[in-house]
Structure formats: structure tokens, C-alpha cells
Length: 136
Image 1 (tube, rainbow, N blue to C red):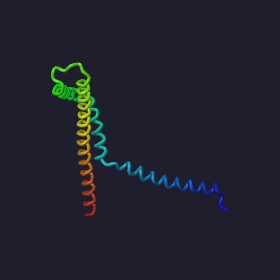
Image 2: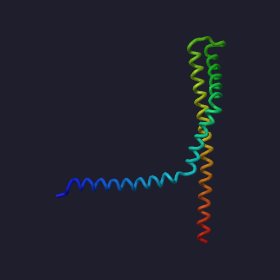
Image 3: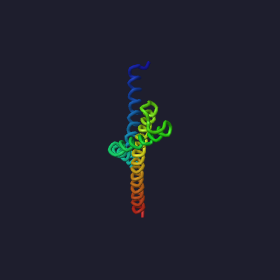
Image 4: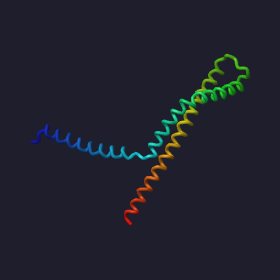
């Protein structure tokens, strides 16, 4: 008869061994993150910082001016202190900030991805050239 404690111990050790092997593969895969992905992350971070420093206030201003012109077309100028024109201006200001954030983050992320991709191509080319010279 099989001892249940020994069987459970064996099964736990076997599962832990499988889990450690999978973890080693995952760590190896994480260490080989491409330069393009690293560039994307770095570029997106730089874009967020630039957005907070440079794009937040102009996005709000441009959205507010667009909201004023939309509310002016709908309700006539000069605008009253009514609720609907204020809501339109507020929503357009939020949309202006969001568009500014998307442009800064996506643009800088795209630039970072392109630089990282170029670095990957250069690395791959150097490795390919080195193996060609080693074979000949």
C-alpha cells in the first residue's frame, strides 16, 4: 500500500520542479526583451513627462476655445451663465487634454519604438556579420 504522505510529497516536489523549469524559461524570455519594446516603454514615459510639463495647459486652452466656439454657434454670443454652455466648454476642455495626452504619449512612444527597432536591426546585423566572418 502506498503511503499518502509520501505520495503527496512526491507530487508536490514534481510540480515544484516543473514550476521552476517554467520560471527559468520565463526569466530567460524576460531577459531577452527586445530593444524595440524597451524603446517603446522609455518613449511612452518621456511622452507622459513631456505632456505634464508642456501639453496639459495648451490642451486645456485649445479645448476650451473650441468649446467656446461650439457653444457660441449653438447658443449665440455672448454666452450666458447657463448650464449647457458651461458643460459644453468643460467637456471640450477635457477632450482637449485627452487628445494632447494621446498625441504626446503615442508620438514619443512611436519614436522610442523606432529607435529601439533600429538598434535591434543593427545588433542582428552585427551578429550576422560576425558569424559570416567566423565561418569564412
